[in-house]
Length: 484
Ligand code: UDP
Image (cartoon, rainbow, N blue to C red):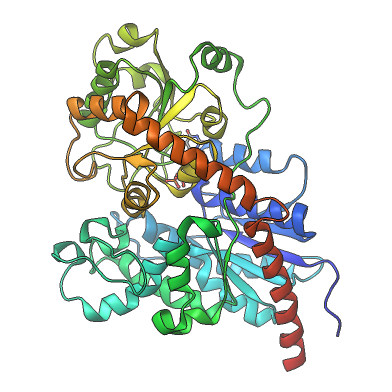
């Protein structure tokens, strides 16, 4: 049998804007640059209007087929009230398997390749059922992947909780991971999310390869370590494709008139953008300190303000966008804050067109929770960061940005552990916006930007990596057909 001329790819995305965006962008890239026909299966969390908006804008022009899977029935699943976001996502994805399988079967023509994201690894077996190659798209960075893949080994070697250890964890060939930087699922080894996390780590090597949302030059050593069979053993069976950065494109009319006019009036690189991703929230006390810190710094800012939460560690992933309108939100700020800062600052409720803001020439800094999409968007815009990690793998990302890439500064103590006080925030903001250290970082991140621009051209490494994945995929199709 012949390999099909145009490959049909089925992509599965887990719920949440941060997961959906890189999958949609991968889909678009497969279509526009590599001639695939792409169907994306999404399991919407229905958490916010933002998700619908993201899907809609990815449909213009209509390059992708998007199939919304019905929300799984979780009534028979024993899910505790305080189950974490990661547990909930893992369970939702698991329970969606029958719907995903039937949706695939209902396709007019069977796909030639299956690509799932991190939460979709349990569906790799469907690739085997269909007799097609299957890949895992880890839409974050290589250091995270190395820690994830090495976690089953750490699970055997480390006694007690990871966070109680005094020495960093060695990952062969990689920068060691400090106990305080471990990813959320590693915080409590008795929690279901830890078991789900280890399961994902053990399932990833079952794929025919791993796609990563970085470009080759960003993490040279870590990538070399990941590709070294001696270190990561069976994992090295499948190739690692560095295909990033895949981020939402800047939209020509992405900024509303008022916001655009305000930004246009500000001096070049003078505005700090403050946002904590799709689910990040602060405590009420932290929010007040941040407001004071911004005000005392005297710097210009745009702040995407979200209703505070009592417990902020897990973010408000499933609640963002629900309630908390303008006036109610402003009531959480110090008295008179808006009036006193109105000449220098803008407060936007809950959600803002982030990529469009970051790419505006007036923006010169980003106070960010360090979600990987936000991190890439900042790098691509040439904007240095104040790293304010909250949950998931963000502490790891922050350390990468501060210690390895050199494009961010951060508070002395983790914001998820201790309130960052106004004086320290004032200093951080001034450092990144006006002091020499900030200028040096801005120059470094601009070098990265140039580097990225090269990686995504037709001669660049990321383009080449996806082209290689397509070639390998064709070969796998051929091998699988021959074996049957
Ligand atoms: N985002 C946005 N507007 C907002 C908040 C977030 O457009 O007000 C987008 C942001 O540009 C990024 C994504 O949502 O593409 C968030 O993903 P990230 O990985 O940074 O963090 P997560 O939300 O997954 O924690």
